[in-house]
Image (cartoon, rainbow over all chains, first blue to last red):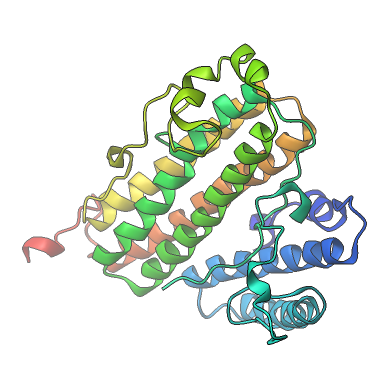
Length: 104
Length: 198
């Protein structure tokens, strides 16, 4: 499985690439890195659904990702329409949106 | 169904707009081996795919291609944001600008609008998976060509990520083809698919 994983260098870029220095940005970077690791395991598991090493990898990273997403949701707002915390306002529409420079 | 995740799969943060780069990178939005073609190819092929594991691979790779389509769009959006009409004219982007301003319209770099002819769906497991293996390699070559033309590290970084994903998808489609061939008769070493006429 490792040779199909993205090289460490790129993974580090993803983790450290945030230059706007704000908390939302660095937390989002960690979510992107974990989400990437998980998705890589998903594609592998589609072809090898009984591979225990891959299943363990999925389990481990799913736990980390869930915790990071919950932290993001509480601090900075929803990542999906189902995550919107009812603050008396529909936070989902608040920018920046993902394709905008300021969101990255 | 699909649910929108309000983040890019990999960050895109481009400091310097550049219409020349946008003019070539737009091929990965609406060109023959671009991300729109990739997403539609896999997500339409899955309905005639007889094997569960391969249905999964087509669904999940196809979904990832939608995320890549969004990354390419983000690159193009940021590369063209705030350009003056003079800068657009100087880069030769005026022939796009006249019809679309800086809105994102899927075309190939040559100006040909996106065409469903880029999306191979034969309804045959061997034909479709070989199409997909070739498609991933062709997309990889297009990214290599973009990297030959683009110097800005802010642009190269997400393009290198997307190139890397083509290699991984090629691996997974290799698995898919092996799964499909294992399901054919083991004596069928010419690997044609007899299921439709059975």
